[in-house]
Length: 193
Image (tube, rainbow, N blue to C red; front, side, top):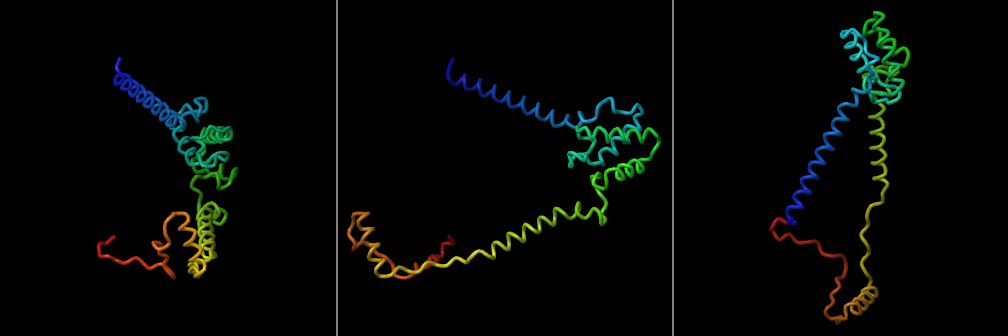
């Protein structure tokens, strides 16, 4: 078999493997939330189950913190989902179930907490930290000493540098030109560079 045919076969197998891996990863990502709610938790009435799922999507898992109890597989989320379903089966309204969960776990349990004095940290914590970090960076930048141009070389330092460079290059010192004072600024030649 030719070398060209072998590499084409290997490329085809690699592509096939990568596609399979991508499909498997996407399947796991999509199916992850579906695995959180056990079939044993589900209510027999589809209307009550739909209400329970809607409420569960609005409540935060107190362990996972940025996941709803509907998406979380934590044991606490399982207990919270069961409490929601028990209340709904007992005839409680959606609002009453949500209020029960807030009374039990606090406003933090809501994924979209109300804006009030007790939840200011939840609403303003991240922006406040961002502002503090920006202020600290600005202050650090202002404290940094300004860059000072180095002093020009003295006549003795120029002569010493000329000797060192001529020894290093092995060339005559006449061809070496060391400018006195600061370097001249670049001239604009009108080409727009």
